[in-house]
Length: 519
Image (tube, rainbow, N blue to C red; front, side, top):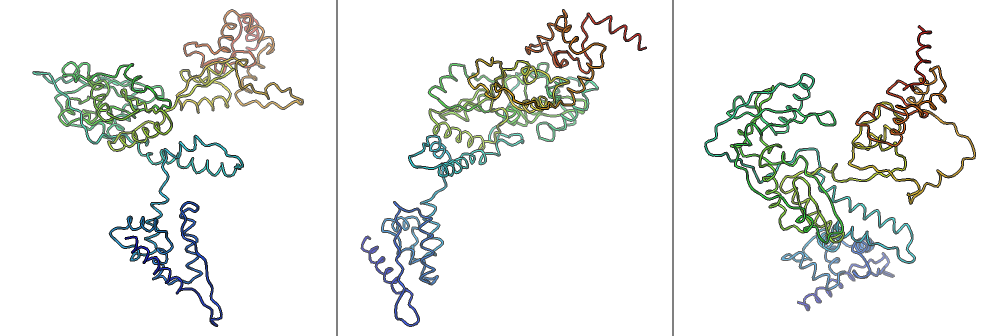
């Protein structure tokens, strides 16, 4: 075999010499030196660029270019090419096919996980300049983003649909169907309830039917964002008559044990977990709900159904069984690894499994952060569990609305305890700056100025008032006033209730006299 390769190489070298360019007078010939591909000192793309330039200079006919290409390879690379093209012979193929075969093997698409590991362990070498580091960083970031782009379909807004499993319900022996009448819906909620029913029907979660032996009433629950969640009250119909499947939920020590040794963690949330699981057609009739728009069978596993947690947990336990660093508890998944490579390898395997079986994830619930502030009143404005003040600075409301899109905790820390103290906040100003007030602040100031007392007098009496004084301190400290804090704002140490100024008791008579004189 080696002798045949050597003979073929000699024949091709003779062909190259025969194709050398001669001038018209034949007084001299142009000889171009072409070095073979050296994989230790040159990448394949650079070699291809040199080779194509050589073909143009030598004016090699298209029919012979594949053979010239083969002759420019080392014995080791030629053997590799033969193995890639087997059983075809390299010299019988086109130049493009030969280049593509070697390029796919020698310059494969970079893998995301190893590239991320290489990037995280990257250190600047002596003499390496910033442009080189920046170019490396840009390329690595692009590779890292490929993971989310590649699996963006499992994070879209569509409802997931498990493609290889259907939940089946079993009734106790001798059970008779139960039909409950529809419950009255408050008139104020009727429109939103109808919209929610239409949405569920459009997404294939429920389907309208003309009649049913079973019927469960629904209860509309108003969520914090004002939307409606329809909850079926199976406690009066189906739950007492079901044979509940038994499957143990993971204990806390089991979860910690499965994640033992992990240093990098990811938390993911299954989007509407139960609703991603289809229900067997025979069981859909049992889960029929009765609404003011008619009867609807439920085609997905519903919340509030006895045994739904066990059915879901049994499925996900079997689906992700044997995957290192993956533990699922109900609709939450935890992925971990001892280092960056193992962590992201497990994460990518988890994504693959979800895609294969039609599961969808909720990216919006995957990150939680802690906001630390040295200004206590911001806790009342930015706190995720408090209402927004009716009247507050537009800039603060803008930030508060942005933060409402995230899951976060907000805590207070004294300025002296901050390690990253703001230098500019302690830099004395050398010139006066024009302070620009927003519209809300200007309105509140005009309300105070319209009073028969000055803002200074109002401020002093407010702080001494037996009712307004404690309220002022509570608002400044961001204390929970059981929802009432959203109605109050502070302007120049005076308390505003909506658009009205809170008047101290000592000013009661003064304000009443002025009111009587004006009328």
